[in-house]
Every structure is written in C-alpha cells, then in structure tokens.
Length: 286
Ligand code: SAM
Image (tube, rainbow, N blue to C red; front, side, top):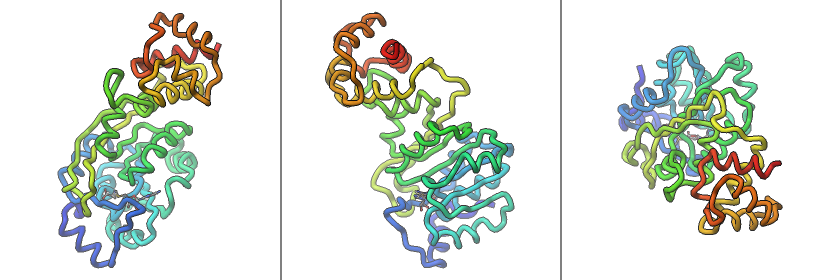
C-alpha cells in the first residue's frame, strides 16, 4: 500500500536517512494523498501501461504508480535518494530505479528494450527550469509516447493550454499543441509539498496526437516562423518575420504569402491559429 503521501511519513524517512534537500534539483516532495490519487486518475495509467517516472524523489508517486501500472521505471538524478527508494519500493516487483540525469538517458533505447517500442506513459514532477526542454525533447525525438503527465508552474500549464486571443498564447502553446492535446488535471497548492515551493503548481496531461492535426511540409521552418512572430508580439506579422535572424524572406514574399491566405497585411502573429501557422510555413516553403 502507498504509504508516503503525508507529512509524518515523509519527514520520518527523510530523518532516518539524514537527507538534505538540494535546491539545484528542485526537490519539493508531495505530501498529500488526495493530490496523488487525482494525478494517477488524471494520467489514465492502467495495468497495461509501461510508465517512465522522471524524478521520483523518495518514491511517493512511484508507490501509487507501481499499484496502477504494469511496469515502472523511475529515473532519479540524486544518488542520496537511491537507498531511500530501495526501502520505499522494496515491496514492489514491477519497479526499477535508474540513478541518472534524465537529460542524459537514451529514452528511445529504454522504450525499445523494455516495452518493445510500444507507446509509454511519462509522469514527471521536475525542477521547473528543465520541464520545457524535457517535454520538447520527448516530442521531437522519436520516443513512442502515449502521454506525458507533468507538474508545472501554474502559469506554464495555462500557457500550454490556451489559443489565440489570450495573453498567455505563445510559442510554447503552439509547440505543445502541435504534438499533443493538453488538459489541465488539477491545480496544486504550495501546502501540498515539503518544503513548500514559492509558486502555485498545476498538473497537465499532454496526450500525443496519433496523427498530426495540421499538415506541415517543413516543421523547422514553421517553428522558426512561430518564434519570430512571438519574439516581437506587438509588431505586425510582416515585421516580426522580417526582423528575425532565423529567416531571410523579403517583405514582398511575406506579403504575398499572407495575402494568399486571405489575411490582413496588418495582422499580428499572436492572432494566428496553429493551422494558419502551418499554412503560412507551407506558403513560404514553396
Ligand atoms: N516525484 C516526487 C514527488 O512528487 O514527491 C519528487 C518531485 S521533486 C519536485 C523533483 C525530483 O526530480 C527530485 O527528486 C530531483 O532530485 C529529481 N530530479 C531533478 N533533476 C533531475 C534530472 N535531470 N533527472 C532526473 N531526476 C531529476
């Protein structure tokens, strides 16, 4: 039975191993069973699933995952947590802990060897500064992924989920929505962690599209166009694209592409949908 999701048991095990929190690893451990149960439910993990957990900490979520999934591989960077995980996961025979930096692990190899290249589910609660590179890395590489359920800063979850016409809409929204369907599962207050983080958090599930929802001939070009459009949010789309050092189109070429799409020449990039960015990049790719 999962036992760690409360302040008393968490404090006890930390004391037993004389553990000291490391800021650089973003260590805030969940101490609320209700939140843990909601995350498991929202992640859609079932007994058929192979789960990669990134940053298990003392194994609080890992215990729940072992009970809900077929197999769990947990990757933890901090070697001082490994003896703790040995104890907290000892009653589960479907858990493997790897002491490694997730950014250095070959996840493709892991999925091939341990799950015959079938889609895996990823669960992560990580330092917020590496969250975006990890999500993008997972989507951009060819790791077979069914979904990523991840705890992020509340504002970041909002940014991933919104569409045009809101202030949070930006390059991150489009990158995430190109690959996946985002859904915020729940908000998590700082009180649910030990120690308490300074910011509010949210858990978001990104379910990978089985088939692309838009047709893009040149993905790299589309993302350059998106970055250029949001680098200078308050400029028109034409000026944003002209001022980008990642693109080398003339004003006339950009104008023609925008006109061919039936859009106004004064439109701003932030008004375009993902589908329109795809169309624009296909026009400019000709
Ligand atoms: N999942 C646990 C929980 O919810 O209580 C712990 C979450 S804590 C916010 C983040 C965990 O990720 C820590 O255990 C930290 O040591 C680990 N971590 C940080 N950077 C990592 C990396 N690059 N690779 C693997 N684990 C990492």
